Image (cartoon, rainbow over all chains, first blue to last red; front, side, top):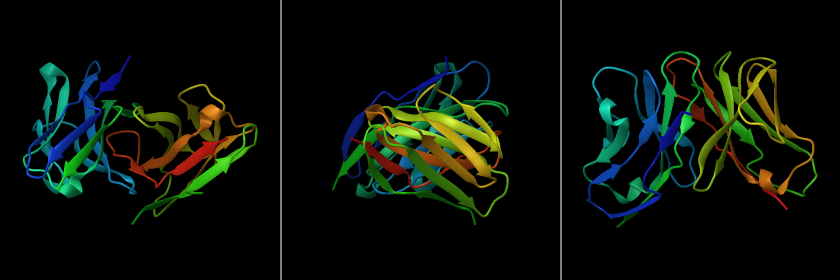
Amino acid sequence: AQSVSQHNHHVILSEAASLELGCNYSYGGTVNLFWYVQYPGQHLQLLLKYFSGDPLVKGIKGFEAEFIKSKFSFNLRKPSVQWSDTAEYFCAARGGGSQGNLIFGKGTKLSVKP
Amino acid sequence: SQTIHQWPATLVQPVGSPLSLECTVEGTSNPNLYWYRQAAGRGLQLLFYSVGIGQISSEVPQNLSASRPQDRQFILSSKKLLLSDSGFYLCAWSWGQGYDEQFFGPGTRLTVL
């Protein structure tokens, strides 16, 4: 069955620390990948997405993610986190093509200490 | 620009009571619409999606149902709520089922007592 796994339930970092959140997916064939973020009290919103092309994808607020096909991974990174990055982060995947629905990981809560 | 609304924002209902949650989208036509349930530590679970008026697909068997009476209106319902229906319900829309991102509403927090 198609699935998305996020390895960390809760990550706690100090400001200026580097961030990497893991995401692995299980899909056969082509896949579209997404990272969503939910800031406290706000809507879930898209951080970045990968459909094809350059496997290193840059998103909003200094985030980036790298698609590594051989590892079935799409890890989210940021070189230096800020207190305002405190949020819950969701990885999602969809089989390539027009008929797939998004499958979400369980989410990773990031707490950044000022 | 497009906006998505959900109401109510919070709801407390007794077991066995009916439910109706509403979602509307503005600024677009013929969107794909989705209902998700978000549970702590369990991510988002797709409940229903719709590609057009009156067209509903269910992803999981459950106590809930969905309807799309108008192009930009999506309703989540139950005839008799269960304790296990408690959760955070999110509505989302997308331009189409192809390569498009989904845009999420603010959600409804449902507590069944």
